[in-house]
Length: 526
Image 1 (cartoon, rainbow, N blue to C red):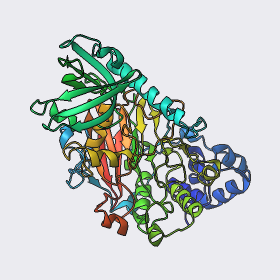
Image 2: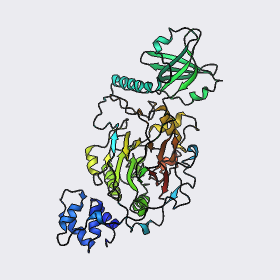
Image 3: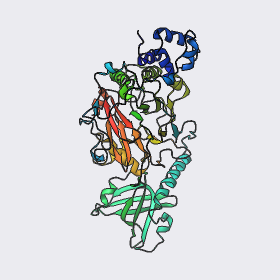
Image 4: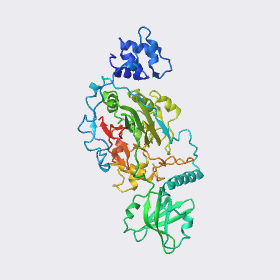
């Protein structure tokens, strides 16, 4: 095939299993005979090399002086952000109205890409990300009862610390000794929620000293807040003691929450990140053509500012995840699924920094926090040298902290909370609740499996600038107290199983985040 453009050089090298840096691609493309230069460079590269560098190419081109890649100016004019009237960014619309995947407020990139992939992309120079709160390599839990006590005690200590400065907290074992009618406040984990015969609500809180009940009267505005409560989350209750000092008449309920004064960090240059999840390679419904259109677009001048790709779980379809899944698989072997995913990853430009976490369809333990993929799977997916970390993890790129969490707990929230607080159509609203509770999976039990570690990796200690989830296969985004919350859809068309449970997925969407402004555009590749 002719190799007259850097894009085609990069693709040819990817087909041969190499990730090439920009200098190598430029040197080959500038050669009198690019195809011959590529063959020579590949032959000269060490047999175990996964990345072809400019040094490899220069050593192979002894017949002519090698141009300085830094002196080659093949960077096109920066694309305008107003190249589509349908474009939406997350700063313009009110947070509560954003993220409607049925609206035209997305930019379609499903046609005309073949004409742009022959052009030259700009010079990407991503900074290696930093990773925090990764359980990988540090998992010590065996499932013993004492370990569950430890992890919940740690949850209480850290979240109660965020609340104690806002209320005059008293331990459970001392509240009953106070005078009837005293003003009192308690911080605890929600141990029980039940209604009384009169329709009021009893909320039992537990701290390290014991339990104490609080009564929320049904005719108080506060009663609506009870609908937001989940078992095991940490809250503070303020009120007054009853005449027998046996319960608290609740006047207010406080969540750890994100401060309204939170101001996110931004990058100090124009640079973008693509946020995706739920690729599901191996499924019969994996949208391979849409993925290639996405990859083509990443090679185009319109994507020259995209230097990061963050993938929030479910790289492959997996096996045995739900009843009858084997009937919907295109690739039945889990390792072959990852090999195919790795091949798809090669379509992504080699100078894009990739970070990925596992999800519930991936070949890792189901209990959260989930360690990253084992060495065998890392070796299979090593061609692009992606950064692989656990679920959840906080990834900092260009000074912007992104909390990446696959999102299994969203199922629990959507099942438990009122529709206006959490729904599959507006998954970002459920994400707001997790930020409010400062925990990515506050309720233990049901679909949520917890691995008891030496501390609770699921607590949100530091407020992120961006919260990125997947899992529910729906696109939704908005800002909660200045934290951009994004659920990123999927790359799998509706399966028969999804039809049976009324899941209508948002397929082949790629939210593109401006890291210098935290504005966002959603591109569609269907």
